[in-house]
Length: 251
Ligand code: 13P
Image (cartoon, rainbow, N blue to C red; front, side, top):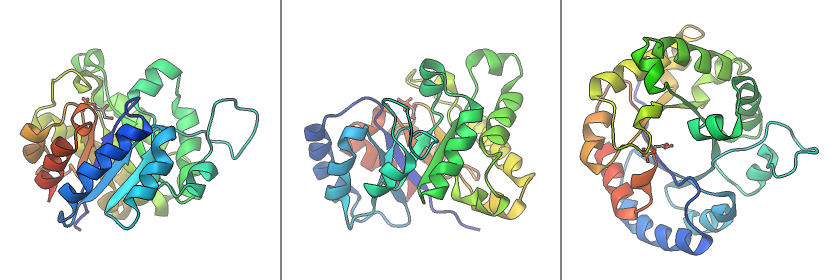
């Protein structure tokens, strides 16, 4: 089965509305002709509406970077799946390692968030990945198994392929260190095999992205890996030319 690659820029806490508008005016002509590639921008909440308006009718999808699992309630500062769906957002990044580390995001909460997103017809991009110490201690597979199986625990088998999983080794995020093609392939294939334990058919549909210092210079060899179906890109997604070059590498 052929899976359409997804190249998603994760802006993290970067870009005001005005900066987001400038960026999108640069990106749209740059990716206009890209065929057979989905392009996503994961933007701060404040820039979502402007991006949805300016990307309407284009190939660019807009994602939030977090959401709460409850429909509504006394959760000051949080945003629900329904609120994002109302804006016509396409999906949400869930469980980024920065949220796990700095904001105490747990696998149990993520299990709820993934189903809440699917229930609102949002595409979840569930992030998983090991730290340097876990890799060096031979615990990469154990970490990925926990994060993938717990994060997907509440998703019905027949919907597993609607989830996107981003494999982001923590040691490669924002460090300039990139996983070697062998390391990325091994981990992405392992993530897919974990989903295949529940449904081989859905594992074939599931897109597994690589994230961690992906840039125009290394994108082509990572995106050519059999189990890597795209990228989640931080630093290199802040400039339309650089994100555009990564989209080209996926096409
Ligand atoms: P960098 O591309 O800056 O390493 O960030 C990766 C990332 O965390 C994307 O979610």
